[in-house]
Amino acid sequence: MEKFTVLEGVAAPLKLVNVDTDMIIPKQYLKTIKRTGLGTGLFSEMRYKDDGSDNPDFVLNQSAYKTAKILVAGDNFGCGSSREHAPWALLDFGIRCVISTSFADIFYNNCFKNGILPVVVSKEDLDKLFDDADRGANATLTIDLPAQEIRGPDGGVVKFEIDPFRKRCLIEGLDDIGLTLEKAPAIATYETAKGAEQPWL
Image (cartoon, rainbow, N blue to C red):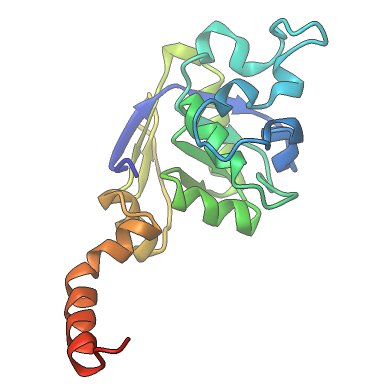
């Protein structure tokens, strides 16, 4: 998993509440178990017209936001079914951080397991960040995970809370497999001792 320390990039404003995982990545894209290639399906029902062409009204199709790394979204982001394809699609598009006032629990947990930082802020701070994001490519946000703060283009700072264990995992790039591999020496020692003690196993 790619490490997350400090991220600087364009933030796209998605001023919708209750964005569910089917909106993030519709069901027809769930046939694959690969984590790559899903970026084209991200928000596809809003991003594309019926003929497959880009919908110019959708934020990620606007020139200022086509390379957005941060998404500023409304309340209850990631609700609905527990598909891990949702963070996969965000990551494949290039989104490394989602900021909202609240997230669905399963989506929130899945983000951390895939190298995406979900940041919970107050309604007042979200409104400020929407204002920043509305400026498009002329203004970027800096997400500083070690310092636990979001820095705006005008020098404003929004502090956020995060579980220390999840923070460490993101900074060090540790997913569940990486965490297990940290215990590899202890596991090998145990297996060697067990093999000597019970050679028939």
